[in-house]
Image 1 (cartoon, rainbow, N blue to C red):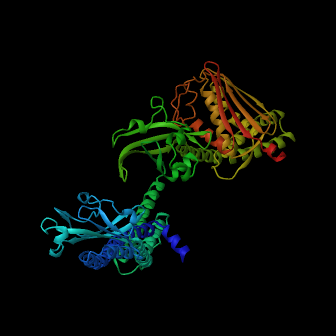
Image 2: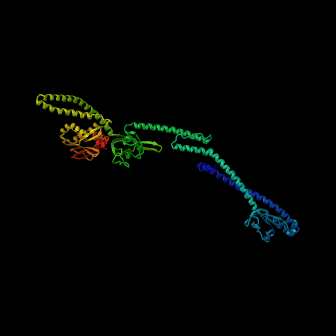
Image 3: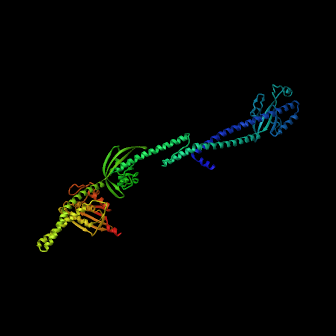
Length: 628
C-alpha cells in the first residue's frame, strides 16, 4: 500500500492535490493547536490563580489574626510552613513600601520591591497609595513561577499600630510564588496528546480524501490523458469509455464524441487527399508543387518517373536538387526559376529546360508554371505549380509515328519490287543456263550483267523491310558491320548526288544486343546528318571496332562542324540547324540518344568548326558478355 501510495504521489495531479490538502490541513491544525494551547494554558493559569487566591485568603486571615494578637513568631512560622509546601516556591509579606518583612526564604528579608515599576507583579495595577491584588506568570532566574499578590487592607482595629485607614489603606502585601513547572508540563503533555490525536485524524482524513480524489478525479483524468496520448500517437481507435455519471464522466463522453468526429474528419480529408493525388497521377505530364522555400510539397506519378525517384524521395526535397542536382537554389540570372520569377498569384510562365534523370543523365523538358496562394493552418503561403513535359518522350512518339510511315513505305516498295524481281532473277538464270548450252555467248554476257543489278534491288528491299520492323520488347543479335554495309548501300545514291565519298573501316562480326530496326535507324540518322553537314561534298568515314567490352562505331564527316554554343543543344528535341539550309524536325539526334540509352550505350560528339564532326557510338559487346 505504501509503495502504491508513493507511486501515485509521484503523478502530477494526485501529488498536487495531496500536497495541497496536507498543507492546508497542517496550517489549520497548527492554528487550532496553537489556540488550544493558549486557551488551555489560560485555563490552567486561571485555575492556579484561583487556588492561589484561596491560599492567599487563608494566609491573609492567619496573618490578620497573628497581627491582631501581635504574634510575630507565629506569623513567621506560618510563612515558613507555607513556603515548605511542594507547589509553593516562596511566601513573602511586604510592608506598604515594598520591603520584605517576612519570607520563607530568609535571604530575601530586608529586600525592597519598587511598587511603582511593577517589578513585584507586572499584571498588578498600582494605585495611588496602594497596590491592587492579582496573579501573573513571571520568570525568576531560570525558573518560571506564578506569583499571587494579595494586599492586606488596614482595618479599624489596626489603626492603633498602622494609623488611620485613610492615610494608610494597607497594612502590608502578601506575596505567594507558586511553581509553574507542573503547569507547563501539563500544558505540554496535553498539547502533545492533542497534536498526536490530531495527526492521526489528519492522516486518516488525508488518506480517505486522497482515495476519493484518486477514484473520482485523478484516475479518470489519467485515463483521459492516456487516450489523448494514444490519439496523438496515431491510435485513432482509443476511447475513454464509461467514467461515471459526474462532470468528469460527461467530459469523457464528450472526449469520445470529439474523437469520433476527428476520425470522421480525417477520413474525409484522406478521401479528398487520395482523390487529388489520383487526379494528379492521371495527368500524363509531370506535376510538382513547390513552396516559397523551394521545397516540393506534392508530386504526381509521372514526375516521379521523370526524375527516377520514388514519391518518398521527392516530397520534401529542394526542387533545385531534384531538377538540377544542385546543393543550393539556382541562379535566377542563369536559368529560369519559376519560384523566383512568379511573385504574384496567377502569374504564369513557359520555358524549356534540362532536368536531371537518375544520377547522371538528363532529359529535355518543357515547363509550364503558375503561381497561386494556398491557405492553411500557418496562414496564406505562395506556391508554384509546375507541369513538366518530357520532350524526349514526345520525340519517341514522333519516332514511332515516323517508323509507322516508313513501314508503310517499305512494305509497299517490298511488295512492289521484291517478288517480281526475284521471279525475273530466276527466269534470267534459267535463260542463261539455256543459252550456255547452245545459245549466243553475247546474250549470256548480257544476262550476267543484269543479275547483280537484280540482286541489289532485292537487297535494298530487304533492308527497307528490316528498317520498317516495329519496335518491340524483343531484342535481336545485331551484326553491326552488316548493318553499316546495308546503310551505306541505301545511302549510296544520295552520297553520290552530294559528291560525298563513303569510306568503311569495319571489323569482323561486331555483334550487339538490341532492336535491329532501331539500331539501323540510329546509323542511318547519323550518316544522313553527316551528308547534310557537307553541302559542297566531302568524305563520310564510318568505322567500327572493338574496345574491351564495347563495340565502337565512329561516324566522321568533313563538313562545316558544330559551334561551341550549339554543341550542348544538338540532342534537345526540336532543335535543328542544318548546313544545307533545309528545315529539319530537330528530333533525329534526340531519338538516337534515347535508342542508344535503352540499349545500354552512349552517344557522344566532338566537332571543330570548318573541319567536321565525329559522332561516337559505344554499345555493349555481345560476344564479350558471352565470354564472361
